[in-house]
Length: 173
Image 1 (cartoon, one colour):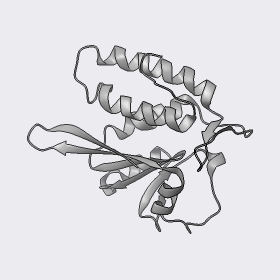
Image 2 (image 1 turned 180 degrees about the vertical axis):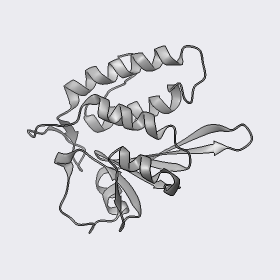
Image 3 (image 1 turned 120 degrees about the vertical axis):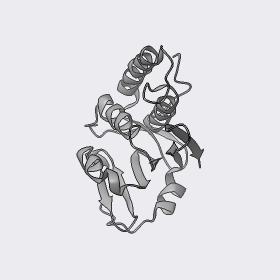
């Protein structure tokens, strides 16, 4: 595939998709061909999503196929990322199959609720996940515990006050 390299599980696909969005999405990239590039990326993402939607990586780095039915559609994640790109002051973190949002979330509270994010008071962050990934831990793990188990990639979009444009910073752990 032209835009996705060596994706062998859904987590890797989503991570690469998010990175590509922060680089090529028309709301960020003002090149004339940004819309066409993003359409190609979305088509490739959809095709790979169908192949990898039940393929995951465990905490030991082993890839496995889950037998559970996946309720998520490729559009779900695409739409969430597209909407999050419009919001400034957020830190977006992919930990395992969950999306965590923190930073300046208060001005975006209603939008996050609309996107089906839930506030986790013990972690002081918003989370989104597929219904079948819900846990019953009742918040006993910290975000650092979860990062340690699954690894994470963090994206932060800030507004450049001089140019009035968004700036993306990425950090993997």
